Length: 388
Ligand SMILES: Cc1cc2nc3c(=O)[nH]c(=O)nc-3n(C[C@H](O)[C@H](O)[C@H](O)COP(=O)(O)OP(=O)(O)OC[C@H]3O[C@@H](n4cnc5c(N)ncnc54)[C@H](O)[C@@H]3O)c2cc1C
Image (cartoon, helix red, strand yellow):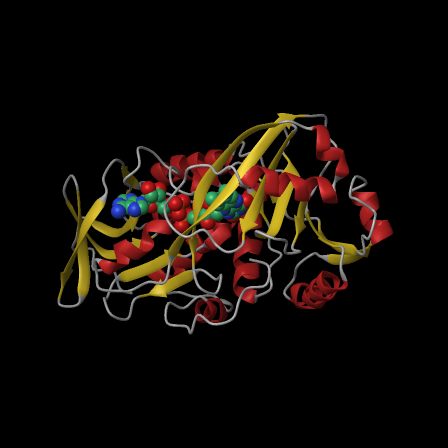
């Protein structure tokens, strides 16, 4: 994409969230005159602040693995490089197996994951219990352990990306919902918000769960659907757990669930409802807590006396196959999609940010072709990412 530099901005990003804010930093650092517009009052007020902070590269396919490996480098070195504390903790991830089915599926993936450079191994039950002594040993067959994964604060990370984006010259306009796109001769040239009009060569749709109505403004029917998920946090207790625990066994009403102990002692947890809860409703439900706590106590009986402090609900920007959508629109020139991050937008953010910058620069690395093919807006959207 060649930037003409005839307009006030090179790039306008719609959405100052998990993807838009690090993308603004990356683009501004690369020298692009960047504007971010968001309907919220500050950064990270959409899905970002609802995320529980898990960061992993343990996926089933190359695109997410490669992007998240890069994100892990960014998150884990952030304090050293930029000085801000984003509460990064390298606690690792453990996917447990209590049935032959999950054991076979996790073992099958380890080979692919290792071939793509992931530090991950299958551990038999005895070895796994040395890492997580409080796992229920009854029926435990083993699990995968990826020690380089971890967690960080979505809000602190957003504010760190925001501060550095501003320092590199990016501009942000809050409380300005985008209401219309300005298209001339099949090329997007700007947008209108509730406050005014802004012009640029490239518009990036990073509107997360709201990406579809934004894409409809330029006539694209984007398969990104808001899918609501709940999370909760307990009181703080003395440190006893390092990795994020993920159990991918389905049960009535849910598929997987996962939890970890935050550096300040609280257990933070989530569950994936089955079937999905489509729509924009972010009111907490009465079904979430009994469903998830029963499953957590089953896999870690020690949790039975811990008290829950708060629950909340947010939206995943979900795609039919569980993979993000990153790439140029073919219908409207200059329109770039960076959305559909599903349940992993926080961890994908920095990796996607750099990929978007390379697309705008028109300068791609060896792996970008493969990543962009997997994340293409024009793929079939069939199949499923196994560890989504
Ligand atoms: C309970 C829960 C737990 C999660 N846990 C994790 C986790 O552990 N790790 C992880 O990686 N991910 C997690 N996620 C997923 C993660 O939160 C999302 O994938 C991610 O935040 C999506 O990023 P985004 O930038 O695409 O969207 P957002 O962060 O929502 O950003 C989109 C922005 O666009 C703005 N916007 C929307 N419409 C308009 C408009 N018309 N005009 C202007 N601005 C607009 C919004 O205000 C918002 O700020 C979790 C999500 C939930 C709900």
